Image (cartoon, rainbow, N blue to C red; front, top):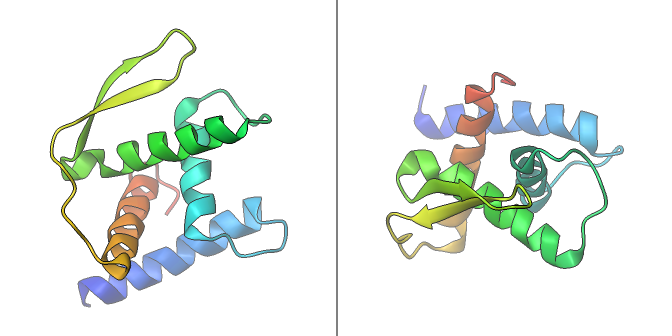
Length: 117
């Protein structure tokens, strides 16, 4: 089976699981899944976040997701418990579709490591 077909099947399975648990009857989009990962990685549970915090949560998620690919490395937790990452390698210039595929691959890998799929 090809890599693309495996990714598509894994992504659909993950999307169904996450949407059933967090989508309130809607299919989650990529940004919503990244946000959920950020909340998970912060580890402070579900609560109301300010707009700036939501952006920071997505940044945490992206850093965590791209860490196994060698782009980021965990650095430290600040006094409020927020994780910080350092850049190891600049991301290559990618077209929109390529960015989406990279993030889907990273998300599938993340949930496989956490044994959701």
